[in-house]
Length: 448
Image (cartoon, rainbow, N blue to C red; front, top):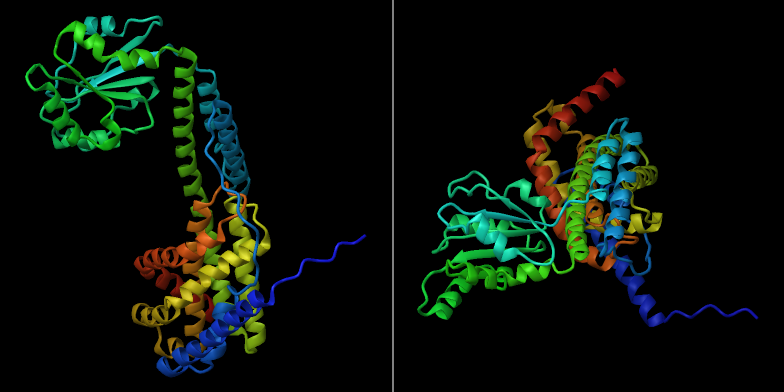
């Protein structure tokens, strides 16, 4: 027996449709007044409708499924292998070589790594460090450890990161002097709190030791207040102070697993940054092509309905290609909703009005050409495509690995995403004006 389809409450459906129709009508009336009366352009309503057509699709996907960070060594290996596959895809798309091979070697080296348990000791200039013999005795336990002593860190430096050689080690002991200095706290901010590290400070004053500890703790960032090891300069006190470090090494296999997961996480972050750089390069090429196709459609189409359809198709194709660049397996309906939301936010922030005035002021081309309403609308359409495309790229970069984006969150973030993209493109407006000159010259030669 067939089950009847579920009913939809008319009390919820009618306001939704009415709201969308009201928004569409209000946007069209405002756009017509803006382009027709303020900017004195003929056909303002049709031009405005054409600019927004590519972003107005109706869709409502289900709830998203968020990507969660791997919690095991095997999980991080699989995640890194997924990124390697994405590099392979970009090799084919960009026609580049050696994107995957060297990174695959890095991953293989890390998987095969069997380094001994290790402790790195680094002090800030002016701090006192226990002797090597004292440290070896204080750390002596059931498992053998490799002790690595780094050079003291200067107080004056161009960068405040710890030496990269310490990255591979299981534990770091960071020696600081009293009183703490700005340079010490700056380096502490650069030290990731997710790695096993303790602050080692010599305090030889016996009087009011608890009060001094409390005063010192107040100066430290919150994550480091429970990782403070004070010692009075005596070997026995140093061994007592380093008890948390010895406990950390009580399960060697777990210690190495934590280190390898941290290294894989760092490797994954670096690869993602490199991958995003390559994606942005490909995206800018796609955007440059799409924005001028949109401009050409708006200028050349004498019939508003054909104009509207063509702009929608061009922007739809651009969004689909962007999804391929970022490896987003979202449905066409979801992509349309995301693009529509960002496009609506861009129109609401007046990108069209601002771009029309700014381009006239910056390009300073032939007056007769630039005063033509069709050309100005075409260039504004290209700039709108540029801003929406840039905000779309930011959104895709934030949602890489997500099965389906959170559209409720997109509604909240869309104005900020568009504002940031518009500001970046505003800074790059001279470049856009140069591209516009070149494009117009090409169009002029083609029509000659």
